[in-house]
Structure formats: C-alpha cells, structure tokens
Image 1 (cartoon, rainbow, N blue to C red):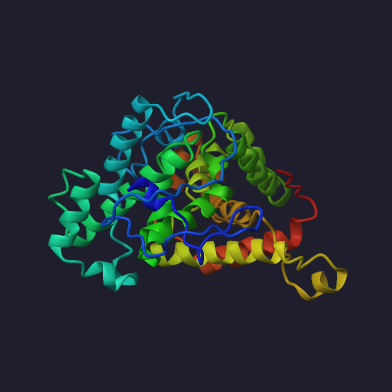
Image 2 (image 1 turned 60 degrees about the horizontal axis):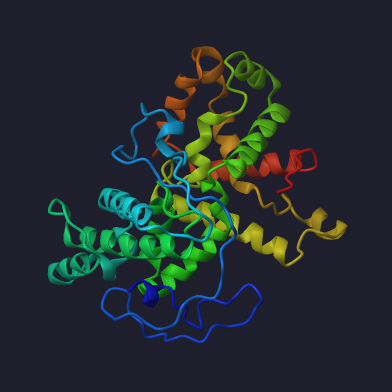
Length: 350
C-alpha cells in the first residue's frame, strides 16, 4: 500500500529536475496491492521528529511549545526504524480520528461515502476506536492515516509530527485519489517541512520575522512585549506551524493558502522584479505573506494586549482563542498593507 501511494502519477508530479516519473495512474490508495515502483526523489537530510500524543487539538491551556513543537526523537539520516515508525503510527491514528468535519460541505462525494466502504478503508490501514465517527469521518481518518504513514516512510528525517494532519486534511478533501493527494502533500511539505525540524531553525527564523514586523509597525506594542519577555513572539508558534489552519475555518484557510500560493507563483514567474511592475502592484509578492498575516492578527489585538495582558501566557491564550473569530479578508488587507509599508525593511533570507 505504501509503495502504491508513493508512486507519483505522471499528470500530478514531476521530479525536481523537471523530468516526469512514469507511473500507474490507476492506482488506488486504499483498495490496491503494492506497486513495484518507488519514488526516486530523496528528501533533504534533516533530523526527524515526532509529535507528543494525548493532547486535545484546540486546548488553549496546553503550553504551546510542548503542544506542537517537535519532540526529541533522533533517527539516523534516511533510516526509518521499526520502533519510531510504530510511534508515528500510533500518533497518526490519534490525530486522524480527532480531525474535525469542516471539510464535509466542500467534498460531497466523500461526505456521502457508504459505511461499508468507510469501514473497509479503516480496516485496510488498521484504524480502530472510531465508532463515534460518522462514515465520512471514518473514511477521512483512514485516508489521513494511509497518506501520513506513507509520508513518514518517504521522509523519515521528518517522520510525523503533530500538525501535519491539519495541513493534509484540506488536501484530501479536494483530491479524491490518494496517490495524487500524497504527491501534492509532498510538494506542500517542501515549503512546510522546515517547520518540523528538530533544531527548530525554520520556526525561529519565521518567529523572528513576525517580531521584526511588529517592531517596525508598532514600537509601543513591541516594548510591551519586551517587558513581558515575549518579544520572540513564541505565542504565535501554532499559527506558523499549521499555517493558520486552527485559527481559520476550512473555507478561510483555503482562501489564505491560495493567496499565499499566488504570491509564491508570482515570485517564481519573476513578477514584481521590474520597477514598472512594482509601481502597478499595491503590494509586491512575498514568500512570507503568512508571517505578515500572523503579525496583522497580533496587531489587531494590540490594545487588548497592551492594556490587559501582563504575561506571555495570557497572550498565548488570546492567540489560541482566535479560532473562528478572524475575518480572513480583513486579515489579508492588513497583511498587504504591512507588505506595502514594510517589505523593504524586512529582510527574509532563508
């Protein structure tokens, strides 16, 4: 099954060198035997990490670093040990059955899956303890398990970390074929996998950019954060790791991600490089639109933070309670205003 998932369809994926991979496009993730074709693409050599288990997804009282920061499980590069894979399997199943059902209105075909098919999919991946779920929830959880396990084998330096199921859920809601969804997730993780590094270099770089945006935009708020020893902006850790997935609704998440992807595509196409194109654009494209949006969400709460909060834990609880309260279009407007005014001051080398 894992080999089947990891066989990329020719119309869905190309290697980094641009060469297509010849595969069987009729493979089905949950109902076919293993294929003899393996991916030839090697992930970057980055240390592995796994998530901590047994924590509720949206508990604002759980300390954020313990809640979502990668745990310290070391693996030899390019080695997926049986012990670590068993740990990943257990945590993946816990997270999969907890996945919310916001996707259902946006994927009617999967929402109406039969109970027989759902249970067959669950049996195929060894999923248990799902009796409280509707058939569509069982089917969704089984797909999460299949693809996340395949990714843990494909990229053992990262393996599985809490938060990755949040990133995959919208993808499998939009893409019904598991082998296609797997390779789309692989492409997605090329941008996001540094969020799950053991050394947290990618996260710390992004948090420092959020901090710099706030400092440049609102020195009063920044000084208050300094006083609380919160200027590192660790209270937005979760927002960075799961790309606002837990703060926004499913529809809002897709809107934000698509605007982010449009900016990244514009950069790859060279849009915004010339003086003329910059003059015509209200906000130049940026690789870090997510970080501007996160800074904007904090700036929207500046008065509350300055006047009422006297510790980082209070700010953390406020950020974790934003779920369902954000206007994604205002958030994007504010983020673009920050880009317009600050992009020349914010250097974002990676």
